[in-house]
Structures are given as structure tokens and as C-alpha cells.
Length: 374
Ligand code: F6P
Image (cartoon, rainbow, N blue to C red; front, side, top):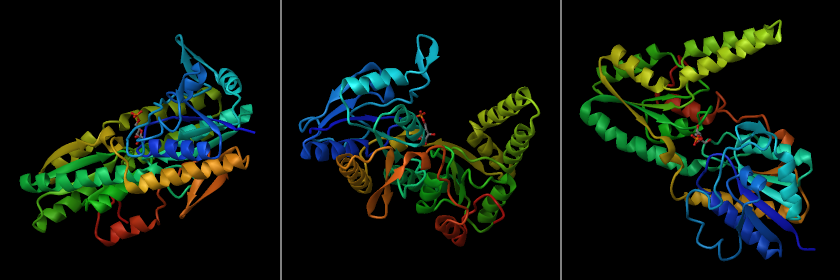
């Protein structure tokens, strides 16, 4: 019996998505399956907007960045429709049935795993692949997109060195990664940043300033500070902890709501904290400081060889699982292999950088300041 397979890409785009689509598509066609793409994430499934996937459209996309299917951050159960937020999972189920799908492959990060799981609970045969430049999906060794973003951010730090050096400046470079520090830590290490600040280690600005002053005293009148977009100070960490404690001890729903709001406000204030950090460092060190926000350039362009191979590997392993009717799983990278992990073990979890991770230990060994007194 011919199997019918749907595929979509959701969440932020990531280098390697097209390699994964190609891997799934070619392997599926090779096994005599029929494959159809849905455009722009879960929105395409809701609106039944498809993309023809055959040997012609799958050709020439391996090296191309972004996703040929388009993507969005839409959530099936919270779709903005005509000014209202609506649960559209049943409508998506109708599309799934209309196409007589045997499986729906969802390519995405942590949020997509959650959304896909919701559809699995509705009765769809779901299988997911882990993609994100943040490398923060739980239960997989790696996510495709990370390696490419790591190279881009590292090259940026390399380039910032010569200008920081020439002007005797501090350059604070903000690196993506959402609430985890994989990208900033990896690029900071590879690019030889003098200070690396990540969300897993709240920083003390005085310690950072002293590390920079020490460099100046040693004759190095410039410093590169690689800061993760989600990094925060020890004061902010304490404020979040207090608000969280209030949330846990709340006697009423009203109090709980207030505490949650307080956390949201603190987190909002965090946006722009890289600029504040730069200003503080200028004051505390007497050196001029500049901010560089790498932003979406880290997600753009051609995927690295490592990401192309990983995405192809996971994509083809996914089709083997469909062939064997294994659903409700994410195809995780395990060493050189791939392994199905039940979605309930993945959703709601985040893979943060463990404080005893070899990268952290190594960074400390070479004298990199991580913003704490560790
Ligand atoms: O999850 C990937 C990511 O690039 C994060 O690193 C970043 O915080 C976020 O997406 C940015 O999202 P958007 O492209 O929606 O602004």
C-alpha cells in the first residue's frame, strides 16, 4: 500500500531545513511513498496550502538556506483568526484526513515539538526532526542549524577582533540562542572572546569589568565580550527568583497572576540589556565600548557540511521509521546514528548548558571570564 506523507517546517528558519526536506522527500519517493509539503508551518496545514514535492522540486535545494516550504511561529491551538485567537487543530485534522495522510513530518525546535505533540494527541501520526540554531532541543545530541550559526558567529568575532584592537575598545557582541548559551559559548570559545556571558551563569558586571581592567593592565587595551541574548545579571536572577517564589507561595489566583506578570516585566526589561551592559562597562573601565548585534544573519545562508549531513541523516532515518509505522516520536541524533524518542519525553524540556560541561571547564582553563567568580 502506498503511504502518503505530509511535511512542514515551523518556528524560526534554520540552515539545513532544505537538506532535511530533501532527505525525507528523496527517501520517501525511493520507497514508493507519496509526499506533499505544507506551506508556512501549521498555517499551511490549516489553510490546506500545499507545495508539490517531487524529484524536480527536491533537486538543487541541498545547499540552499531557509526553507522552500516557508515557515511561521503559528501554534495550532492559538491561531490568530479575524482578530480572535482560535483553536484550529480540528481544521488541521480535516486537512490531514483530506490528504489521506499516513504520517505528518514536522521540522522544528522546542515550540514545534510541543505543537506537533498536540496534533499527535488529536490522533495524527506525527514524527518530528530537531532543528534550531539554539541547540536547545532536549533528548538529542544535536540540532541542525547550530553548526552553521556557530561558524557565522565565530567568523563575526574573528572580524570584530581587529577593529576592537585598532581602536582600543570593548566590543560587546550579542549572539542568539534564546534562553540557552550554546551558541555564545561555542562561538566565544572558537573566536577567543575574553568574556562570555550565558543565561546559565548570571553575571556580575563588576567581575566582568575587572577582567577587562586586568587585560588593560597587562597591555591588552581591547576586549571582546560575547553575550548571549538571554544572558542576565545576578541582580536580575535574584529578582526573578523572588518573583518566582511569590508565584509558588501565592495564596490566590490573583496573586499568582501578579507574580507571573512581575516575571514577564523583568524579562521584558532584559531586552536591550546588552546596551546597558556596554554602558556599564564603559563607566567601570574607562574604555570606549561598542555593541554589535549579530541577529538574523546567524540563521541565513548556505548550511555547513556538518548540518547538511546531519539533516540528511535524520531525514532519511525519519522515512525508515514511517516505513515501520513508528509515530509520536522525534528522530534524535545519537552519535553517528539516529534514534526515535517519544515526544512526551521531549516536550516542555529545554537542553541548557550544564555548568560542568566540558566547554565551560575548557573556557575557564584558558582564562575566559564567564561573569562569575567560578
Ligand atoms: O530559535 C531560533 C532563534 O533565532 C533564537 O535564537 C532567537 O531568539 C529567535 O529565534 C528569534 O526569533 P524571530 O526570528 O522570530 O525574531
